[in-house]
Length: 117
Image (cartoon, rainbow, N blue to C red; front, side):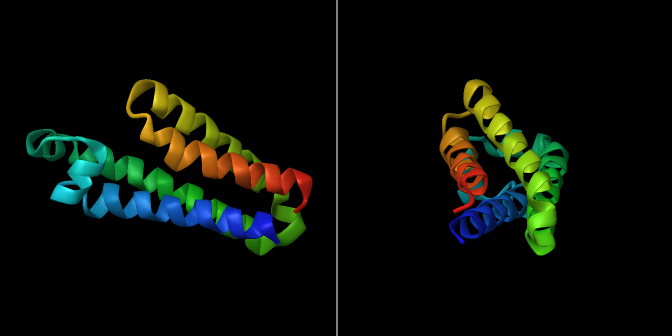
C-alpha cells in the first residue's frame, strides 16, 4: 500500500513538472522555481515543452504500471530508476533541488516497491 501511494506521488510530481514546463514555463513563479530570466525562458520555451512532455510520459507510465498491478512492477521499477538517475544528473548539472524533487521521492517509492510495503 505504501508503495502505491509513493508511486502515485511520484507520478503527480511529474504531472506538475509537465504543467510547469509545457504550459507555465514563462510565468514568473515558474521562472523563480527554475531560476531563469524572462529572456532565457522565452528562448528555451520549446526545449522546456519537450522536457515537460517526457515528464508526462514518465507519469503516464507509472500510472499505467499501477493499473497493471503486479504485472506492472518491473515497468514501474525501471521508470523509477530512470527518475532517480535523472534527478542525480539534474542535481549535478542544473540545480540541487532536482535531487529533492525527483531523486528522493523516486528512491523512496522504489524501496517501498522492492520491499513490497
